[in-house]
Image (cartoon, rainbow, N blue to C red; front, top):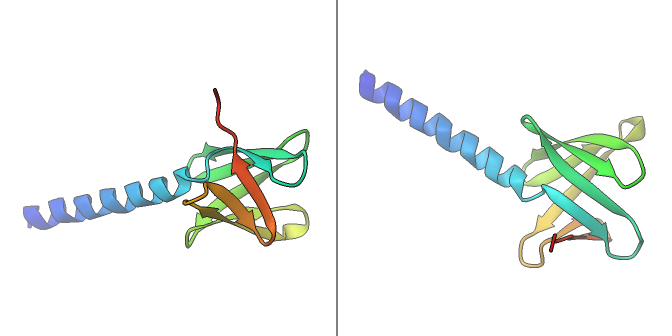
Amino acid sequence: MKLAKIALLLFIAILISACVESQSEFIGNWHHVGYDDSMTIVENGPNLIVKIQNGPTFPGVVKDGLLEVTVEGGHVLKFLHVKDTDKLVMGEEEFVRQRLP
């Protein structure tokens, strides 16, 4: 019985760390490839906050490997993080990570 509880706790810890890891790939400062526009994505507990440069802030959540951001009117924008290029992609829109010096 005690071994089963330990195994369950270990399983829960692994699940939590997997969720945090998949969320962390979206966190950072991102610059739009074609426009002079950027956004910052930060943690907010189990969710994310997306702050548009000189604009509004929207809630986000990672589901099935995609960052889902709910914007005005209840519309949901879905961003994919492409690990090979370290870009966020939403349809034809691309954002590159801004690295701090």
